[in-house]
Image (cartoon, rainbow, N blue to C red):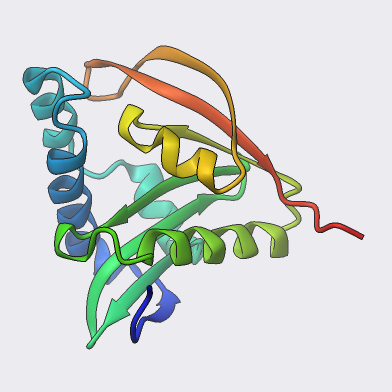
Length: 162
């Protein structure tokens, strides 16, 4: 259940809060799916210039409750990809991720994206499967932090039924 959530476009001023949510959420949810040293290296990476650019473009959505950011989603329109979706740990399992995903998919549709792709952390694959995404592969990729991580390569058709 999503209670009293408000949504708005993210701005560059939100960067610190968003990155904090990412790191706290990933530290909890990815534990047990990745070696601790790999997780530490991945989460120590600063936000990329590309991530900052997506915030400036207005392709990120923030979910707030009582004027506090509780989660966010970012769509890379050029790559036709869901770049990120994270919910603060104290707001896990309340439906916020599902609501953010729906908002991100609507943003993608408005930008003319018919098929949205994403790279899911191993712990998030079931979440995306439950929301109609197809798992294409599980592969090993080199993150810009220098660590190699397994991920689920996924996609979903956003075409609305006629």
